[in-house]
Image 1 (cartoon, each protein chain N blue to C red):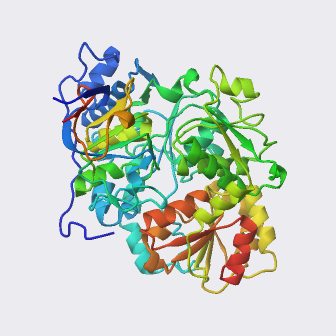
Image 2 (image 1 turned 90 degrees about the vertical axis):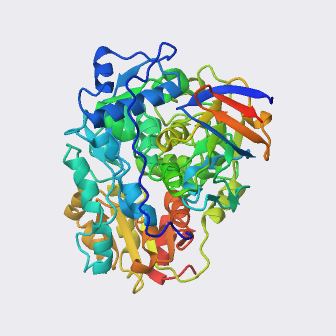
Image 3 (image 1 turned 45 degrees about the horizontal axis):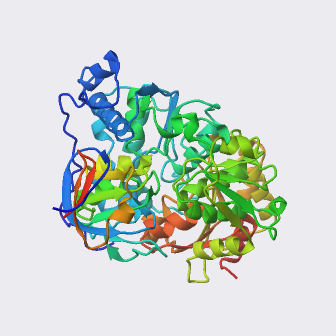
Length: 133
Length: 451
């Protein structure tokens, strides 16, 4: 049984998958709806597939016009399986809620410190936990 | 954009409505009336809207909901999502079902394109048909529910908001300006989620609706090699774009900038949300919550200090200039919508000049300002050159990227951070940009090329 990190859940639901950790902010606008590839000039994940992964990042950014990109990405197959972030803001929380994608954000424990890319993790939005499997 | 699921119409999942979503463990307290809305007493749209507000509130441990005095909505039009148009267009529907009117005064953001004079503006029938596939429906579903047809990203110039008011605004520029310059209180609501707020007339009490969360968090200084008195709108935008990327989601307190005009504040504030994720910034001595440095920070100590110098400014200009070709197809001014002073500036810059044949110089504003400009002879003065003063519509950011071949625009120049960054991003790099100040943009429009 692996370590369980406790944070604050957003919405409900669980997801398992491979963690992909970045220390740069993420914009849902830049996730390819169908192919799940992240495209942002200069970003460390530029050209990297985030679809199906458990995406771990400091905070979300983006526009209001296409901030519901996460919803479209979910509908068209490109969305991450779950999103885990250090600091919650309206854009990221509502994106996850509207898309019905499990999300958890940090309270006392840092997910950026506690999770590494490649680890298999389980995100539980009901309980607000991230478990390293 | 890759191979979409051809032939498949993606359906946006319509949320289930649970019988009771608040348990004893939940933090949020609802009034009897709010609970009845959540129970479906006013129909499914109100119920789903309440559900979204409660879910959001729960996510942020909000105590309760509070009433808002206004909402500002971005209309959801299908053009903005290309092949996923239908799914995108249907997004607000769950919140509108059975709703006959919004609960609070609700203003509307710009329409996709000014189609009032298509022939004169060299807009083909194909473009008109493409835009009209969803634009009229997008407008009607909000105006039929009482939304105020402001059709602008500067609604506060037509329907005022005041300091301390709680509102629900979408569109980055509106949010940043309303929070930072007016001192009203809003989050950066998303285009679907602001609809629940407008339907119910409430938002959860969290974040920026609470004074203690509005204090500054990082300090920004202007480098000695910059002269703020000489800043152009493009300089303000580039500066903010640079600093906001470093500040990430923290609230910046800017120092060293003397008085700023409304237009300067407009370009300055909106740029923050293009690279950063903060919905609020302060400029000491300029914005209302920052009369002094101490009051701007309140109980907070600056988490870091960011210095914006000439090198930073230049690198921001470079980052935002992605174009490769020398020939320029369009120039976009008015992102956000121009005020009357800017229109006058543009008229002066264009005096005696002609826009390069085939190049589109679109100067976007709202209808109120357009009428005023026309009264003053400024519309005629500008359009004499071959440029167009558009009204009600997005100046270029939300239309050029969606139809590069239809409009024949693959390279554009602009003094707007939003336009320069979002156009390549939303067009899949089919339309690239040059980021230049207004004066240079006009020169580019006359020459038809970058140099």
